[in-house]
Length: 386
Image (tube, rainbow, N blue to C red; front, side, top):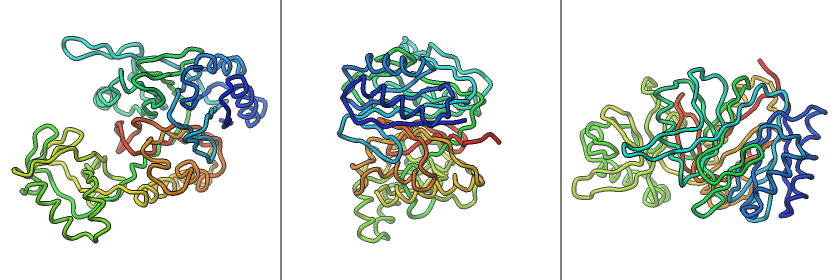
């Protein structure tokens, strides 16, 4: 496959469309684009329909998904405050099926409609969801159980206040989710959660729902206090600002390392009982370990993830990538600008890349799909087929 990308810094709809398409098509070698991904900064919230229509007209109306976002990425840059449009085009990708989904609340909970995930998990599903009307985490949990092997990547839109602008072909939607199924494309998923483990791993010995009452037979708060006492001052400060819990995904690994955990925040604690509340359900018997998150840990985790991908490519070049990074990263986390996009370009080459800052990121860990926070989820497209 071939990919092309463009980052245009303008608030003018027509200029953004014409310049973006011209630059992105230049890398396709004369091939017609068969798939388009479009991300626009929040400056385009009111003109989203005009932008999508202009891009569709300029590209010949290939299948297209995207959204308005708080900030966008293109190439090696991340644009967090200026008006910007990031366009990514692909050719020779195989069939592309775009779709829309919605969530309808019922007396028994709710139901998902508009698209049915088939039992053939081939390829990858890219999804962009409205965080206000579409509970993406519940859908992913359902797919993990009912469609094992399916890979879902993407993010929650971030560019509106209580309302989103989602792009689907020539339309703009304000609720639900949009997506694209790429059944024949080779896509390498990468998920860097930006944390590192500290202390010792423990087994959950008493729990209920998202509450943990015992880790290795003792209250979790007691374990945390012991850990804090053993850490140097600067790490103790990080722990006090926000501890996280890593849940081991592959329970057969003898010594889990960074990247072997699903990271979940600790959202509450009871000093009297020593119990903690975690932002996900847990169960007795799971192996867990406390984690710290800071710029250094996030940088190391993304470097490790990209280095593993360089090894997996085995000398092949990357044709392009889509970046779904948390809006808590960028300048809110790193001292230098363009961290995630810039590091990807540094380690994988100056490849066509488009991305946006998300309210939550979708990506697989340990063969299952999850909704993440403070994460960089990357869909990488190798240049040539195996």
